[in-house]
Length: 284
Image 1: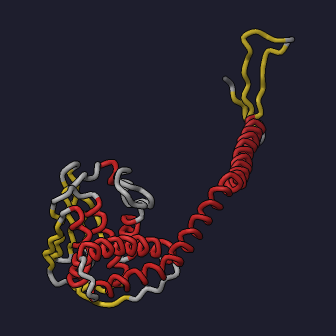
Image 2: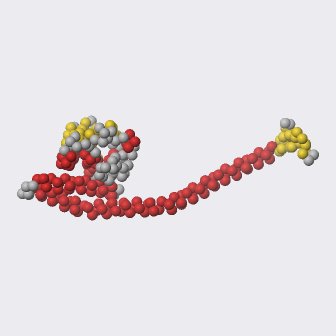
């Protein structure tokens, strides 16, 4: 294919195998050809870019329009949780005080007192979880140094009465461990772990709580957690079993507090045998 340079213009000449309408050669101005190709490529790129921007804007407004009912329902649900938590505060406090007074009174039916006490503790646990979900974003954080072992021992004593309803026992081997965090938030973590362990344990089994070298483990003998469920177990409203009560917010609270204080949390579980939650607290 002959190429000719004339002045500053480069031409390519191609001979046709058979002339068309007495045309035997095609002469192409390469400079103009390159310019036309560049313009064509530019038009294609600009068309794609404009189309992408238009599709993005359209998708944004369309998604906002379609998701508006969902956001509205979520806002209503959050408002309901906050209102419910606020309304529950007074009766829960009154119940706790009444149980305390009843235990100190001359009323001698210990079984009735025990049932009332356990029910009150369960209601209080639900209230505390709902309250954290509702007001966590506006609650003040009061960080202090304290012995984690003492806090865990208080929680174990609190939940032993609840565990006894399934003839379970909670054992604790606790080493003095000082941490600097919000005490009430850490207490909610421990309460939810113990509540979860009792809920999913087999009757007449032992729940083991150990604290050593800033590592807290809570082990129960029960239904366990599959590898698939481990990926979603910390999501809000996720529940291990539909046959066991609960709202699916306990482990979400555990996860949010652990993320807040960089507490490493992981699970080891053998389905239908046992589950252990590990919490590695950072050193002060």
